[in-house]
Length: 259
Image (cartoon, rainbow, N blue to C red; front, side, top):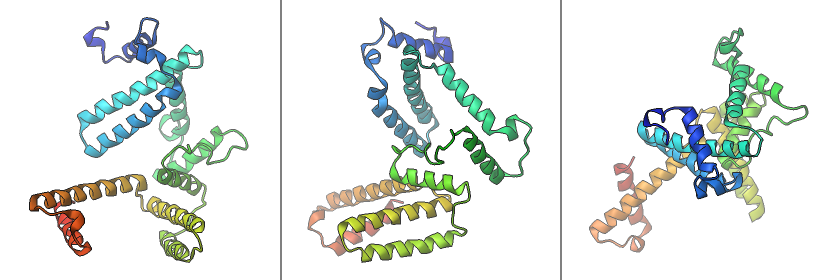
């Protein structure tokens, strides 16, 4: 067993993971593969997001540890296959950071954050193989709204963008009109996609993370609806039996109580 005072050592963490995967290790850890671990990696990412939203440092520290465990397991599986190790992972990201931050880790000078972003895209382009699309590095497995903002952010980095955010907002009205005019379900679905894509662009220009904004809106709705349900229980009311006006009155009451 590692000594208690050494548990904050990264080398000890590597040793623990290797032992868990070793011949006399944990049966569960030993049978895991890259594929079997994918759901846990996604789940841990969302746990980190929740901890960030809660704003509890201790919880965030714990969840970052759980996420690090997933990274360590994937690296250990790769090391066992002779592909790469966690040291190669660290070297790779360190090299990338040095290359993309010449204004900090080199002799390059920049005026402001805007110039940093332009240089960042130029440096990333250097890292791409010849003929590779600017958008090929954006994982399609991302949630659709986040993916939309990511691809739009990338193309904006090379100048493919609206000049004014007001022009994109005007485009929203145009997309809504096209939904109304859609002749069938297939066309309506297409126009809804265009509307959401445009909305993601507006959010990007206004520096709003649309995925997080929608998550927050979902949470507010659930809190308010749960409050309405509690009001009905307290007052002996059947919510489903209320008229729409009565339900809306409860909703307004819930909005005042749950921000």
